[in-house]
Image (cartoon, rainbow, N blue to C red):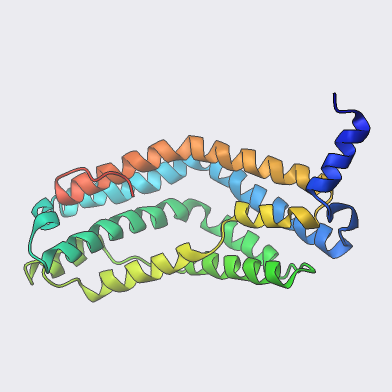
Length: 237
């Protein structure tokens, strides 16, 4: 049987730096976790608005350009297949931007609060700065209209990816290379006290709750959007 003293020893071994966490590390970690927690709570509170934003994009495609990108392109010519991929990606990315819109203000505010935070770890500072840059790039995305881009591609027989589609896809992909908030929180553990470790666990549970609330919906929304746009359902990407 492990005694209470044994538990204390195991805890110290698991997080050897926690007892020596500096005040800057503790304060910055606490502020980071609080900011991220507020974002997750905003997502939960506004999930109906997130769904409505996705529905608006889908309804736009359903009414303005149904089946505008033929499903036959997926197995079409060598030039057409990349166009198919680019448009499926664009649909996925535009849906993500639409779903971000109801929480955009909250995300921007919390990124502003996180940006000046500093830790004694230079590596962690770099990763947090990268996270903030990626978030701000995501907030700055302005997608082109899917229907207009499909009409432009149709003029070439879908052998040429429209420049706006290509540029938007590349900009969106550049926002996905940053560490996630949970990745960063895990990296903060050696610099945290027991209070922050508990907060990290809460953030993990909160993120899991958001995933349960939205993942199924997001997959269904993407399938609806691609069915409207191409005439067939494409599995969620």
